[in-house]
Image (tube, helix red, strand yellow):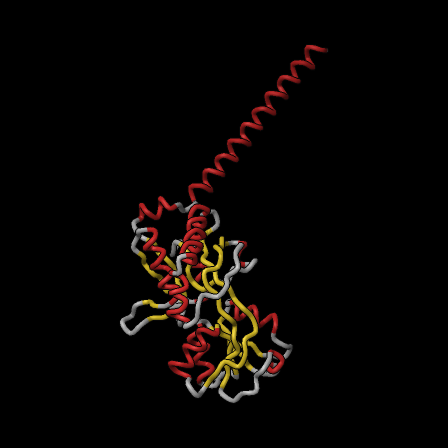
Length: 276
């Protein structure tokens, strides 16, 4: 009886050992697979260029000039990244709704695309510390009666679908506000200029640029109601690239290069930016 018990005890011990070994092997395999999917600095150097997604149709952060080339705040930051990484940059203009899908699908290596680091987005992306920020503004025809969010009740207000303007206004606007969603900021602006909507919510820096180039005497910033810091974004698991970009942001904030870009495109110094 004792021999039989001992025999089965040894078999059970062997079985448990084998199960543990298999579990460890599976865990290692999964870890290796995750590491294999991560994009490293070495991968980018081997590829020989950076493919960076920027927002388009949102001056001064991103737009297309008369020659068909992307220009703006985010474009200058993207090219500055290329300078410090010693790699040429392919700038890929994206609409606001296509930013996250383009990153997740691998169309771009990472985003410098005026993207707010929200908890919902952080479920699928990794965000750097902010590199820019702007105020969210309500823009309306000159002489309008909009002075506060309460005045939006019963009015049609345009926003770009899926942006912080959309989520912030949806959360903060009074009941009875008709929020009208468009696919990009250029369409939102045109809707205001053509009087399809009573007002729009757009970044204040963008509003000032539009007023200067297309809306002088027609539209104006009525009030601001929130602040949006913007971060760069990488795919989940790209820890090495994420760390490098954080170091880059810290360095160009310190040496004044990021402030120079802010002054060039917004006419104002780089605002205080939160860190995390």
